[in-house]
Image (cartoon, rainbow over all chains, first blue to last red; front, side, top):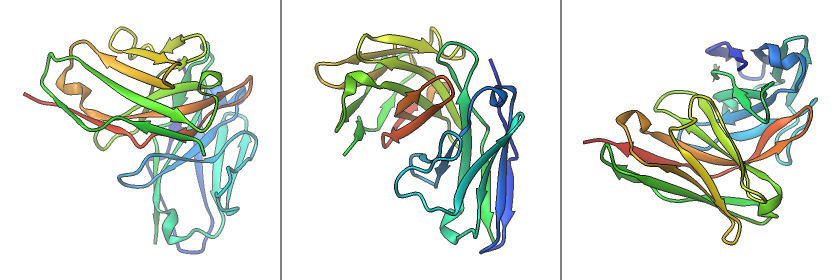
Length: 108
Length: 121
């Protein structure tokens, strides 16, 4: 099965822009989706498809992709964006899925 | 409003059996895949498998095949995750999530609140 690789930790100054990346062969064929998880809470979908945000997700969250790398960009990071972020994509196996290891975002 | 409501915290001993549930509401339960996702303490998300309640078509991650059983009851709009003999290493938070799958995308748009399973002697 495929693997998705994320940086374990990233930090950003309040109000600045941060990019969180996700790398894997499956991303050459399938879109990544992104999830935000705060301590003690269930994950929340923030980006799916080419660059789609579910209702209620602020427009400072955006997604992009190039080759085997997908990116989640937060433009003007807020204190409440401090969380773990996970990517996932479809696997080449029948209806299987793979998650990245997660990135802990700290807002300074 | 789409909701997935999971059963409550479980504390079990090694070797015991367990079945946890995830009840869907606010949408057509039989028309969407449901996934189970494990999160061990302090660790990341792991895809365990999915089920299509409409026909009970089920797929498992190789890591979980033979270790758990995923099932669904469309009459009660519930999905289940079951163990026949728990191990201490099964201690984790387990989430169910509704899945959208097409040729290009695979994402989890609604999540249950999680069921904490603790296995300890």
